[in-house]
Length: 422
Ligand SMILES: Nc1ncnc2c1ncn2[C@@H]1O[C@H](COP(=O)(O)OP(=O)(O)OP(=O)(O)O)[C@@H](O)[C@H]1O
Ligand SMILES: [Mg+2]
Image (tube, rainbow, N blue to C red):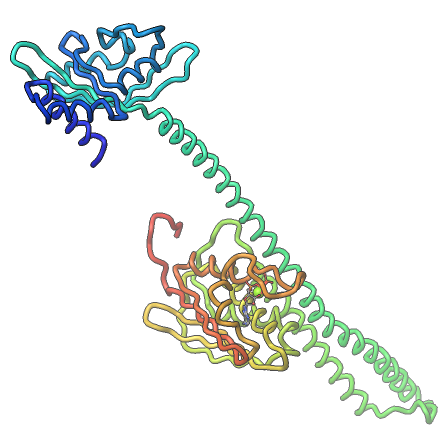
């Protein structure tokens, strides 16, 4: 039974007891009322108290302590503001009033009381029953709880910005780690372009002196005698190889630019998922080439509405995980297909797989099975967030010892909603 209804019942019982409910039942009711922990009072229209139970007397002592057993004849002897002035008017009008009353007193802590007044009627004069419950403790607990809640909200907001900062720094760290790989990728072609230029310089000078000697009609030294056709072919090859090297550098730089293009404002555009996958594969080629054979099976895909640089980060995280899961030279598959209004991108590897008990945890921030320095455990957490932002899903299936497959499904068009700038 809730407090209000129990109070109402008690009042009804008191009324019964007070209006002739004599005998065993009446006495029983009165003893019960005396034992209640809530204060009960009966008073008339002038506020003259006709009956108060034991709890009411205790409450009176708490509200306005008095020496000895001073009789409290009226409600204001309990406390001048025990009930608001309008409460009785409402009671006369509607039959009852209830509310919360806060009573302050100098040098005493304020008390919070739940008060309900019920008009009981009467032949000659108005009479009322009043039920009072001291909820000071609950009240202060509620206040404390509210304060804790606001503190928690502040802490949560702070945590949110810390998490954002951590994610940003992780993004920077992984881009930094990639930069080392990319530098290596650029170094290779640059090194052979440089060595080709040295050979070119040597061959060209040789060729020039041969041509000069022949033009002047002076016989050249037998040892230095060169075959002009052979040297010309060599020069052509050196130049072609160097051009290829320079093209490779241009491509890497272009991919890096595409890949690391971080929009300060979220820039939703129509983008080609295949271009994103290709540029990501190029960027992390240094990490993959000695570890895996890449099998690409690209289907027909439309352009999709997305944040391309963020999706590239998802592809990078999953591809890097695949490479790191391979214990020996293996296969990494990248497959795409359209499925109704979505596109599906699956990235698989035949690496060590994920134990069943760890599968539910891999998207948790900071969950990693890698050594310190090798993994921070944020790659998949970031990826999950990015895919969710795209209203997509990311799922994983894995068989320990056989491999892992990540399946990302993204809508071709983003749902229109007020929370998205389009
Ligand atoms: N393809 C995979 N094969 C096996 N285990 C994987 C694979 N992908 C993820 N995991 C497991 O999931 C964990 C979490 O991956 P996640 O990418 O979030 O973090 P990480 O790779 O450990 O570190 P980070 O990506 O921050 O450098 C990994 O430590 C690994 O145990
Ligand atoms: Mg990772």
